Image (cartoon, rainbow, N blue to C red; front, side, top):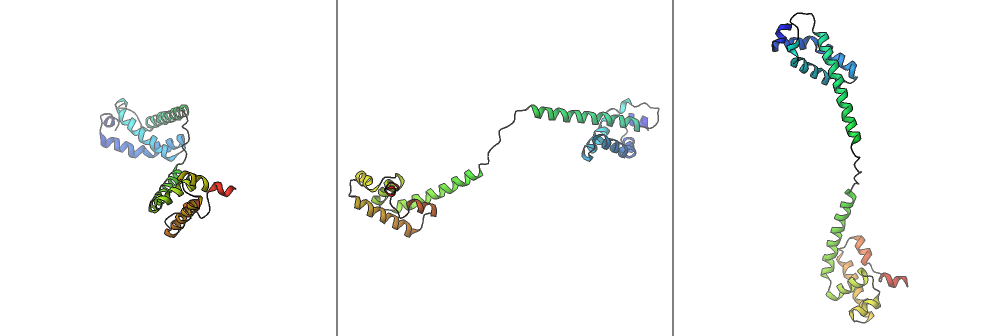
Length: 193
């Protein structure tokens, strides 16, 4: 059988595998202490045995010691490669943790939807009402400042803003958070007084 294996007889090598696979696996398991690594060592042992088959003496007894010696070397090389890999990973610079941006994306989507709703509702207002909303609500001017900016009486600003708020509330097109911003109360500066 040794001569046949050395000459590359696949059937003889299959017999060798059948005869010693369990012994090589058990030896590999004792060396590695994990089943998956033992399976890898066993597979690599028989690959290496096939590669080294030309070195087998034609005369001799069991090939078990030869296979177990190969398995020992394979297990050692595997451990060494794993250690090198771990050392290389340890030397690599640590990456900065990447913050989870999912909440930010959801917030941006919500903001875009809210702005779209505001734009549509704002666009349905008369131009004079749009001007008052823009100045009093978004720019934060009080009634007197808005009246000065528009060149109209303060009462006109109040009535236009009231009318704009009423229309927006009637249309019900704005999200609740936007209705709070444009709500029924006067501009922020006037509320402070």
